Image (cartoon, rainbow, N blue to C red; front, side):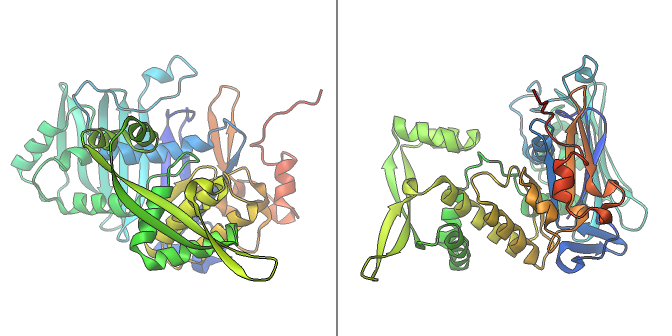
Length: 427
């Protein structure tokens, strides 16, 4: 589970800020909303972030995304720049390092990962774990005379040969995790973290994320998933009674390539380009309607004949199914995109009913959730606000006093009591 992420000099985050899932003392909904991961450490399963457009909500999601991509990143050469952006609205920040610190729990063991980097070089990369109340070093990677140097902690068994092999692979612009995957060795604590990344740290979802193929594949392989997805879809569109999917191999054409280029990650697209044929799927939905004589008839409509909202719900439904079966962390930017408010609330209520350790970070403009006291704790809510210098301030609802006296948090937010609103001047 994620405990917190600290960000400094990344996109709109100029000064150091910390986003945290650590639950506060409020004991409401503690059974499913909060997990006591170790004695005295309680982590929330849900966080919701509000803020005006361009205030930095999406940049918080991008910080989580950057880490996920950086750990897997294998540059073509040592001069290739690391893909990220420091704060650019002053002359000094561009030249300063970006710093990120992720605190997380893998198999109930606490880890702290620290990263400090510039555009083309990792300055330091450190991983600690907590075998007791005191931290122990797993590795420290730093630069010395333009070369990577690695130190392992006293509790880590790694020979000099392994150390030197990793130092060779650790070119300036690569993560130690990515370099480790290129070396034939086994270090238990690193393996456990890599396993956690692969199984528990999902790629964030944005309004542009292509989820249809993922959901189609999962439904075709898992009947339980298909049943769950159909249940969700019938809430979005009550006429849908079934899903079908067919696959066929078709010759690779210019039109195929243009379509694939829009929906595939670049590395996978490059591999597909070299083949002579591609597997193309045909996704459809069965719509059951009642005629004037009260008979029910079924009609098959392709995915292209569905509404954008139905396809969005279809994609997210399979994702929520995965959240119910596993214990991942997932961030979704603009959860309300193409979804009816009732469906948003249904997804959240369903997620909170999962009796597991999955975590969800949402950004949204749908402020009705602020008054949903039946299922949501006050420490669920966060805000982003743009300062005069263009940087983002991030803060929690519970930082405000006397919240118990406020009858409607939604109205208080709209009246500007918590900030994080667009500044619209009356003419």
